[in-house]
Length: 341
Ligand SMILES: NC(=O)c1ccc[n+]([C@@H]2O[C@H](COP(=O)([O-])OP(=O)(O)OC[C@H]3O[C@@H](n4cnc5c(N)ncnc54)[C@H](O)[C@@H]3O)[C@@H](O)[C@H]2O)c1
Image 1 (spheres, rainbow, N blue to C red):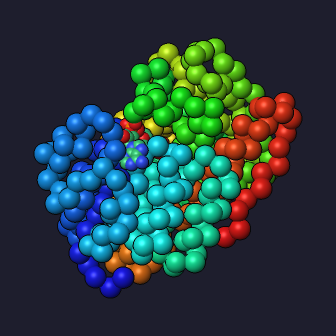
Image 2: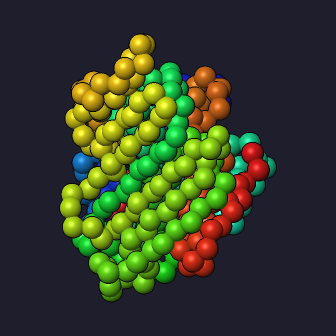
Image 3: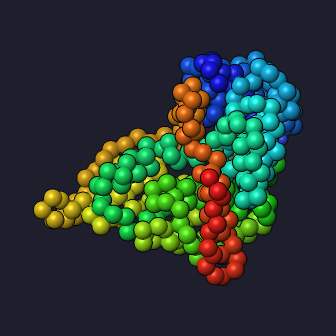
């Protein structure tokens, strides 16, 4: 695509779509051309009033066939992702899709097949990669600030009691918390330590007892280079939202929370001395930084560069999360099978 001004359509007018609409408005090269939602309440009208798109429709297929749409952001329930992403890719649109890419590995495979056939873009919005704390922690690791990784852990702790989604879409047997929410922690650990080869998990169901899925999971992973890791995921915990993260290396340790205002960096100095007082790196992370995510996607389109987060990344994170759920069900370790690049 050689043009530099893009008409963007955002599908979904729910909780996360606001961040996307604001991100589109903030990007100079983009126009928020259209929005879409099929809810029976007035959310489409409210967003139209607030953000002023030229077009507002209830049926996304009207936008599939609209030649004025260049880029589509899909921010609807997970189970709708495959159908919508494939339809827009086939119609020649560039697609930014909310995480998780899908609920199953098979759906991810289908989307990737259509992406390859059409040659259009499919980026998966693993937005943790745009959170300053996670970005800086990864850059410290890459710079060798804590030596070689030994043990990595992250968590997704978020009480879903009041977050059932429009029409209760989150409350289904297919929508495991590990896949919908735990994917953030899994994606970060994959980003920093590579693809784990094996998982062993336990799950329990004591918080959201009226939901059809386990609400709490602990999973341990074998990563490449003899790194071991752990993800704790709970969609029922009684506390404020957090993704506490610790990265332990041979020469130091990094500790932070996703929304915390500081990152603790413990290091062994050049003489090999270890100081128990950490360096405090102050920070001001943006929770749902869709503005940076959208900007990066559009810049890649303009520059003709690969997607900042490819579909194989999104699909690999789904593969790890699915294997985690399977391990908890089996009560045994599971080897993780990844999609081909
Ligand atoms: N990146 C993140 O941190 C993050 C956070 C929350 C949610 N999400 C993801 O974003 C997506 C949406 O989540 P949400 O919290 O905004 O949910 P939500 O329930 O608040 O909003 C979903 C919206 O999609 C609309 N919708 C459903 N089916 C539709 C269809 N066929 N056509 C048009 N509109 C349709 C609903 O009416 C609703 O307004 C999900 O995939 C979710 O996993 C990502």
